[in-house]
Image 1 (cartoon, helix red, strand yellow):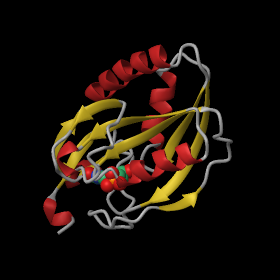
Image 2 (cartoon, helix red, strand yellow; image 1 turned 90 degrees about the vertical axis):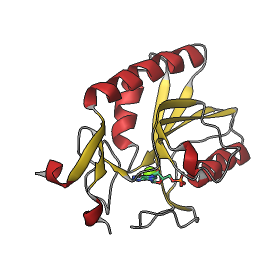
Image 3 (cartoon, rainbow, N blue to C red; image 1 turned 180 degrees about the vertical axis):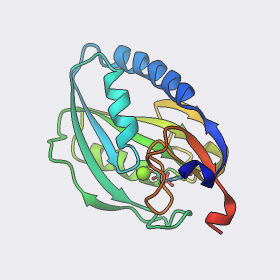
Image 4 (cartoon, protein in one colour; image 1 turned 30 degrees about the vertical axis):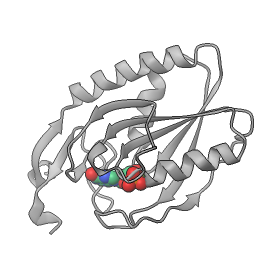
Length: 180
Ligand code: IMP
Ligand code: MG
């Protein structure tokens, strides 16, 4: 049913899993001697978060934060607002921010600065997808990237259009007539 709304599949479940296993090895290397607080950004990163933490063989705490920069639009409004803050302390800890996708970079730029301001020992960024063409904050360079994707509006595996399609097992491009 949902698949009828998809123009093309860009990343298959197998490719997503491959990217996650590869990221998991790098993250395991990075944090093998240190504890890490993994912060998933709701709601988009929730599905990626649950897979990536199981690919990391390290001592990790999990927490979530909700921010908004989009509303229900397909283009970023440029503002970042905290909807739900962390329950965990940040000061003195290694923070790994887990995102579904980096577009303009505004959300992560804001979050990295916030965690630095709160006294984190280190702040690193892991994103499943990166749209480098769209970057406004060129200085925002994610530490761990699963896959680079072209400048198209994507849905699935956590990514939504008007809160729908997050539960697709692949990442695809929506038929343009659905959002025009
Ligand atoms: P940024 O602040 O512009 O980097 O936007 C990042 C956020 O925008 C992500 O957490 C996503 O929720 C959302 N986003 C960016 N590109 C897409 C897309 O292609 N499909 C769905 N959501 C997107
Ligand atoms: Mg998001």
